[in-house]
Amino acid sequence: MRAVVIGTGPAGITAAETLRRLDPSGSVVALSAEESPPYSPPAMADHFLTGRDETLYWKGADVADRLGIDERRGARVEAIDADNREVVLGDGGRIGYDGLVLASGSSLYAPLEGADLPGVLDFKSLRTATELIGRVRSGQATRALIVGNGFIGVELSLLLADLGVDVTIIGRRGWVMPRALDPVTSAVAEAALVARGVTLRLGVEATAIVGDPTASGVRMADGTVLAGDLIVAATGVKPHTEYLGGSGVATDWGVTVDEGLATSVPGITAAGDVAEAIDRFTGERFVHAIFPNAVAQAPIAAANLLGAGIRYDGAEAMNSLKHLGVPIVSIGTIEAPDDVLRWEDGDDLRAVYLRDDRVIGAQLAGDISAAGVYHSLMLRRQPVGRYGRRLVEPGFGMADIVFDVLAPEGSRPAA
Ligand SMILES: Cc1cc2nc3c(=O)[nH]c(=O)nc-3n(C[C@H](O)[C@H](O)[C@H](O)COP(=O)(O)OP(=O)(O)OC[C@H]3O[C@@H](n4cnc5c(N)ncnc54)[C@H](O)[C@@H]3O)c2cc1C
Image 1 (cartoon, rainbow, N blue to C red):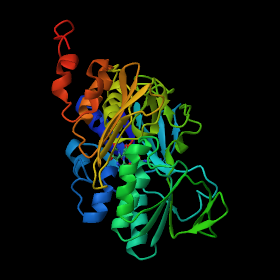
Image 2 (tube, rainbow, N blue to C red):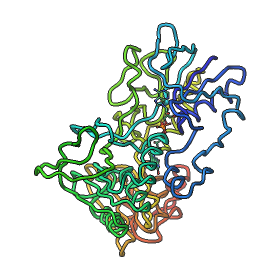
Image 3 (cartoon, protein in one colour):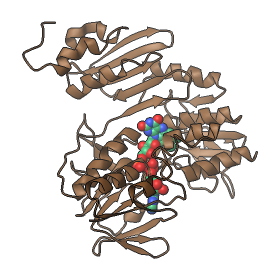
Image 4 (cartoon, protein in one colour):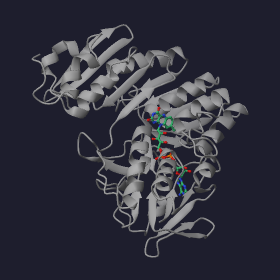
């Protein structure tokens, strides 16, 4: 097969690798709008702090050469001509395909007036992150305003604070990472952020990014304007679907895919942040823009182009704050629980969200060793009433659930 992959992020390079392995006599062209080798965005903060590349170029900077992938950098796709099965590049060049994987990722985004002003910076790609950090290192930026209190805004605020920037996070909800953390767990993150010098303005509304000709401040609902020389609009992520107009590929927020990650156009699949796949637990389509989903979807999107017929189990929500000083992990959802079990001891805390006697979400701060246990219970949709409060107490672990999760039905000892 002549395969083309759009994007060389975690999803794209994994899809390209899979296609080489499964179809060694075929060809794989992997296109990136950027000039860098395939990289891992979660490693960018460490890269900028330490200057090291090993984890950034997570597959090795020479991965394409090693695997025989025709990797083309600085090759932005402008359109897809699905009738002729060709990808159209910014320079007018065309590349024919038999099978195409869309893995073009996403950008930071905020639905705010002025969010498209010059000088509103992104930190989602290495290209945009390099530009942002370059402004800090050259002394052009000393006061950052991050509109949005989600995961990437929090990670970025920590990096900027470490680089000596005066950082303010502005969030409409009253606590940080409100989609992933409840206010109790969030308080641990907030204390750590404040201790690192980050200013939190939470429970307030930004109405516009202002500045002429470039962004220089954020107007708040009460009319005040906060001044900044580094402004990031990051209330969420927006999948890169702009090149799909006229292609026939159906999009909603992202590219809508079926349970085999196929798009609405034959011969085209999608994976990673660009794909709006089924949520494993709710069954609804959602863009869960995290690394594990990208690298789990990519081999399926690739193999299904070759007719493998593999069903994707569904995406899920999972976040871990790595640079806070206190480990914090969240999995699943905090929406509409029947009950919440909590255990707290200072910065060590666990919260397990339950619905219909099943775990639908969990948050851990400090000792995060039980995250895998809760994840296993979620995956198995295992009833947990038998454990009572023990579920959140220290010491509860895999040994407590091993029979429920691993032993064949009927062989379990009585509780
Ligand atoms: C700072 C930061 C920290 C993160 N930390 C975590 C974490 O701790 N845990 C976690 O699970 N996730 C984390 N994420 C999210 C994770 O990085 C993404 O979910 C993951 O990178 C998605 O991979 P992807 O390949 O789908 O997209 P991307 O990584 O966005 O890659 C997209 C690729 O498509 C290319 N592209 C885009 N448009 C075009 C076009 N028109 N033509 C050609 N090429 C194009 C880009 O150049 C790039 O190569 C983090 C993200 C950031 C930014």
